[in-house]
Amino acid sequence: MSRSPRSFISTAAVVLAGALALSAVPAQGASTPGVSATEIVLGMQLPQTGPASPGYNKVDDAMRAYFDYVNSKGGVYGRKITLVVKDDTYKAGLTVSTASALINKDKVFAMVGSVGTQTHISVIKDINRRGIPDLFVNSGYSGFYTDPKKYPTTFGALGTYVVEAKILGKHIKENFSKNTVGIVYQTDDFGRNTVEGLATAGVTFTAKKTAATFIAGTQGSGLDAQMQQLKDNNVDVVVVGAVASAFAAAVSSANKIGYKPAQWIVISVGADATTFQTILGARGIAPAVSAALLAGTISASHAPSPGEADDEFVKAYKKINDEFNKGPDKRWDNNVLQGMNIGYLTTSALLGVGKDLTRPGIIKYVEANAAKLPSAALSPLGYSTKTHEAFTGFWIGKYDATTVLKPVDATRKVWTTDSAKGPVTELKYTRPAIAADALPKVG
Image (cartoon, rainbow, N blue to C red; front, top):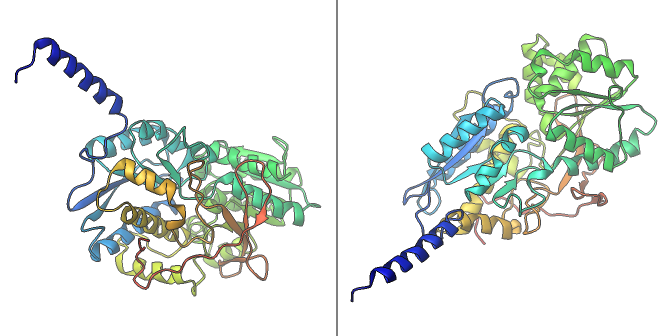
């Protein structure tokens, strides 16, 4: 039966209006970018080169190694996982262009495991506007996760810096109340988040006296002036709210000027032992000396220490790393453990969604199924409709003479809190066991 021109125009207008309304959120039945009958394409950004790259440039190789292991076992419902990685050198301007390439040229299904707070700030709005899953971001900046209405597709891969700093702040208040506590931090949302969490715990600083700052990315030339400032103000406990290369630069600079604080305390993302020793080695400091400089440093972790040889996840991930990691530096450390763990989490989420893989589907699944996404972490995930924060608990450790982080207490205690003003309390959590084949199970 034929239709009148007016009827056709009216119908077309309704269809067009509906299409525009749905353009921001792809329909469940629509063709999904990055997904075919045989492949799932994921995108990632991180500094593979530049002053912030040491350590972090190993995370992608570890993730790819885990995905290659999954692919060797048949993939996810017959689909192989492909990880496409772009080097943004930890510069926000480059992050914008590399994200555009991943989305428009490589046609990724989702962003997974991207590294960096200030870099991710430059792309997070556009990623969310497009409805692209932004999974397991390697940043603890609370502003990305505490309001899912603002960033509905973004989920963390770390506990927030506020949570971690509050837990470390509790330890500082209880153990270093008679000391002069200072801080060196990078002047971005990472550093400010750290200061915020410490302040909530009652640990505060005085600008240009007990608080020294630097611009992220400038630590390659050393932090001599910052260490001299803290030394001149008799700071004997130094907190570092910065990336791993900056912690190494701070210790190196302190050592150079004869500044020997009684205690170093470092936010977890800045405290990887292998990265620390590699950077100091490049500055002519022998491994035995750098190990001695690291010994006694306090940090926190949501996961087991990579040096815990008897941990079942560590054993499984190390085996996969040995057999599948094709990166230039596959030495086992925190960065490799984190990359493996994100690979495990991502695979778990992809399996949980089922064969009908869509962007809205995986976002909804991750938000609603935190308890079904187990991992190596000694803390549960916090994902819900109210928050997209990742791990809610940390344990506090101290590096020993062999560069292994060990609990400060005889028995490891995991502490938990929120990113607001809530108290720090002990966490009781039993981590689910890893399967014999090291593959996540749906259920």
